[in-house]
Length: 301
Image 1 (cartoon, rainbow, N blue to C red):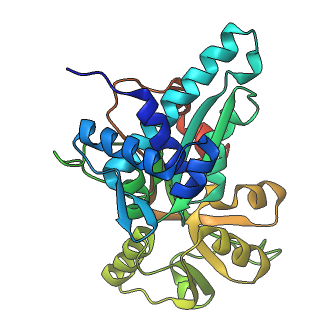
Image 2: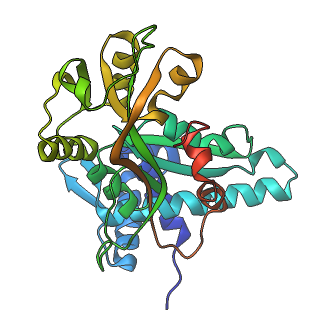
C-alpha cells in the first residue's frame, strides 16, 4: 500500500485553512497551477474529492472536512514533537473541541468543562448550534464531543456513542415569596404567570402531557427556547419558571430565586455524544469521569 504524501497533505491543509487557492499559493511561495496539481494528486491517492469547486470558490466536501481534521492533528503533533525536542514545554498543548446544543444550560456547560479551565496545557474550543449541525461536525471530526439534552441512537452509518452523564428533576422556581404561604402545586399553576420552555422542548412536552392527564390548566406568560433567557426572565420578573435548577444555580445560592418545588416525574437528561475512535482523548476521559453532582453543581436533586 502506498504511503500518504505529507507534502501534498500540507498543501491541502494550507488551502483549506486559507479558503482560497491564490492566498495559499502566495503563502507557500508556489504557483497556483502547481498547488492545484498537488491537491489533485492527493485526491487521486485518497480516492475522494476534497473540495467542491464552483468557479473560483472552494468549499470542503465531507471527505475534505475529515482530511482537514486529521491534518490538523498531524501537523499539531509534528509541531509539538519539534518543540519538545527543542526543550520548549510551552508548545505541549492539547486541543479539545466541544459542541453544545444552543438551548442547553450555560451553567451545565461551564460545570462540565471546569476541570480544564485552569490548565495551561489545554486549548479548549466551545461551539454551539442545533443538534443536527453539531452531529454533522462530529461526523467529520471537526469537534470531539457533543453535549445535548436529547439522546441520539447510533447506526451503521452514524456510530454515535451516546451516554447519559446527568439527570436532574425539573422544578418550579421564582422570587422569594416573603410571608406568603409556600407554593401550592398544582393549584397555583392557574393563578401565577408561568415561564415555560418552547413547545419543541422535551421538558415542555412532558409538562403539557402531565397537565393534560391531570386536567390541569396553567397561566402562560412566555415560551422561551433559550435557557439563558429563561434564567434572566425568572430572575427579573414576577413569573414562575419551569426548569432544572442547574440553570439558576447562582441565583438559588444568592437567594435571588428559590425553588418552589419539584414537579413529579419530570426530569432533564444531559448526554455526551461522541464517535468511536482508535485513540481516546485523555481530556475527554477526565471530563466524562466527573460525578453527576459535579456537573450539576451542589444543588443537584
